[in-house]
Length: 501
Image 1 (cartoon, rainbow, N blue to C red):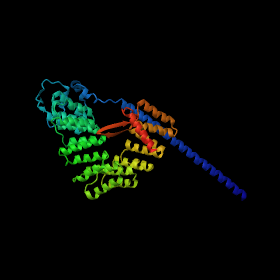
Image 2: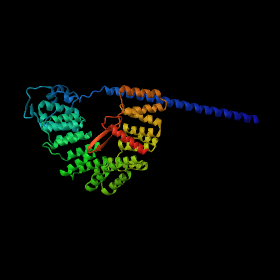
Image 3: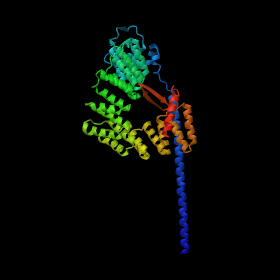
Image 4: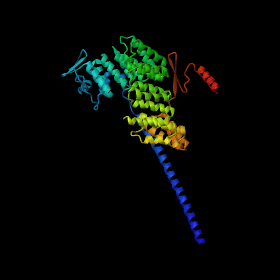
């Protein structure tokens, strides 16, 4: 019995050792497989972003030279086989292709009206066609109508010119819109407001105020939409002093009771940091709409005042009778994100579906950022993978930032790779991905990322900030020493650093 017991013991020990060896071997094989998969994915991502970059660099934008080209030369290139021209009430139809491509001596232009085989084209019909193209986002057809306006002589009509300004503004070609505006022999309030709002969308407040000054010296008087555009420009650039001046102008010209101007004022004061005046305007105005509530909630959220934002949301829900929309929930989620209120953020996110609202990309982005900032990276990743729509580069960027803060390298690499697939020209993501590769000893992949950056000529955009002094906005960029008072600024900074230490 003693010998048999010893034999069984030796057999058990042998089996245990073989089992441990097998488990260790399986772990090593699984680890090697995971390592190979990660490296293969990294190389695949690098190949994809390289090919996307090359394809993007070969694209040409034909619109840049449009206004530099004479009408006859562009006319021969404007209409293609795929250009489907819409029909208007004045009979502008597919015949337009013939008008642009052919010089027909039988057609005549008299007093702005073009007669041709039973159909007529006047300024009203052409401006309606341009507006229709812009509303349908069919800018290619709109550019063709521009050619027709040049050919027919209707380009001098104020309504046609105003419609073209709006068309180029909505297509993002604000500088080209300005060229059309400058060449207009006659301007009205629509054309002035259209070009001001175009530059306001780009937050070029100085040009907006210059155009407004020229407008006041013309025969056109500004309307409520003009002031709304000016306030949007001040909001985007943080020009509080200039925004106050526009506010005074609205009071002097009797636009105090206009709801959208009050909403624009609330947004402007919130954005510029003057929550006291924003709250005063908000409470003075009786007929508030959902935009008014959204502007105030977003203002509190922007400045990290989550308690006030949530309280205002509850007042809106219970007392005002105004139903919150998707933007309202976005403001509340933003306030929770800034304050790190994870429980409340989950609650408001789930509340959307109870009120019949489907969360959109921005709502998912807020919740992902909130979870990531709090260190719940796996939950954030699970939320991304369960989204009913494809996540965008902003969502992956939020996860990437959180992974860097909390030191989760592998999730960070995943987020950086996914973001580069969506935004291959982002230099900051290239740098972050190269650093993440290097941190796990993927030196070959890190070198390839930096080589891709060099080949594509990618450079990170320097950070910037601005400050307003005596109604002048001064912008400062990182590593920019062009300011004429740089020595004084550096001296004050050193003094402040010494004081803080």
